[in-house]
Length: 547
Image (cartoon, rainbow, N blue to C red):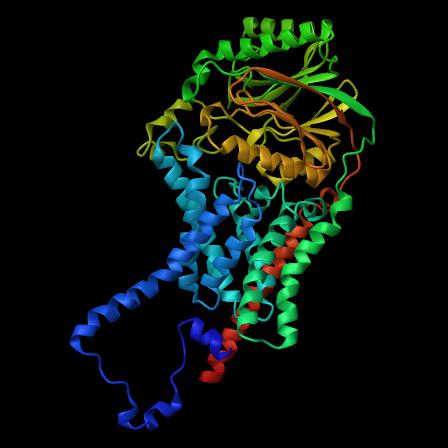
């Protein structure tokens, strides 16, 4: 370990010659009047790193939509690297935790939009603990040669853990999801969101290392390596651009996205469930009138949002009649988002393929059920802190298989709302034959918060990752049509009834990310494990040598 790293860690060894120095060479003791000033100075110095770590988290938040500041992410991580490099594991955890709070508290504020601050603070704190563990890992590997590579892999490992635990995981806030407009985005088509996150993290950590080595006047080889960790991810993103295409491979189709709007904001929007259903039916019937008048082309198929019918059409004849009348009016297949209530067992968040002649046919049950939203783990315990859990009187249950509807000859894959955050949910739908991805969502409970823009950016990354058009019908906005290159073709305003009718390309080619599946993530996890293992080996050898 170099002396500079040891000093940065706060573990500088004692100078053996200190005992041989004459007493006159020692620094004179400070007068009593100067001691408070020195103590205050030391306290201020100790606060610098924590404040900078929190600031790094805030900058990372600012890099996310709706702000087009994706380029802030590498600078945020460079600042965090400066706080973590050479620190002990415990300090790494604390600094990472502060960065996580600075990042996630503002990013996830929408989770408390209608239920108060307790769920928001609890979720942000829990997720920040994972970033704290990530900071611990980065601090450990920061003493290795080429440490930015290992540190970026550790960041991906932290995201992988957050995406799986607890309660099935919460991947919201991956670095990749803030890069829809960035230079790194084409890497999603090469190795999925893990590779995209790795590139952003590597650029940030490499940027810090390049600045550090430049200030320390390093050897040419060291400087070149540091510069390479910045240039390599940027160059890789530019080199991957040919993987991004929106050309039609299987012809085109005219798709319609319906946004019916809701009667009022907040958790009680579904107290008027019939009104929500009527809104979407009426907007579809209005679209049918526009088609007859020649104002818009006739769509080949239509997609409604999640929860566009919170009334079960299988058990409630009036809901069946409203939907069937609207589908017959437009005269093409329609995907309906409904809550299905079996006589026994959990509820189902279901997309129903409704044919104008045959009625309801194929179905898809949402597989990734949102904890504390659609199901309540540890209900009796959570009720102590927030009685709103009892609004979910009956838990939803997960489906098992991906859903691809044959809609007028087009394979339209269903990825319902929260599922778009999970790599495997989207990938399995494309592998099942989806030529188009539909992400029906319901954001009405989150008001006019930034949540809908964060999710829209996530959908744009998925479009690039799998080279598919992504249709985003939302009950209250923002609904959109996203082309396979990630650009937004059309979008609606929030809380406005609207219909988007657009000709879209149909594609069947699988990107490398689609074919490779989780392999890039597994490779990066192995790289992180190798870095941590190397650090452990070095420590064991150092202790044995000291003994």
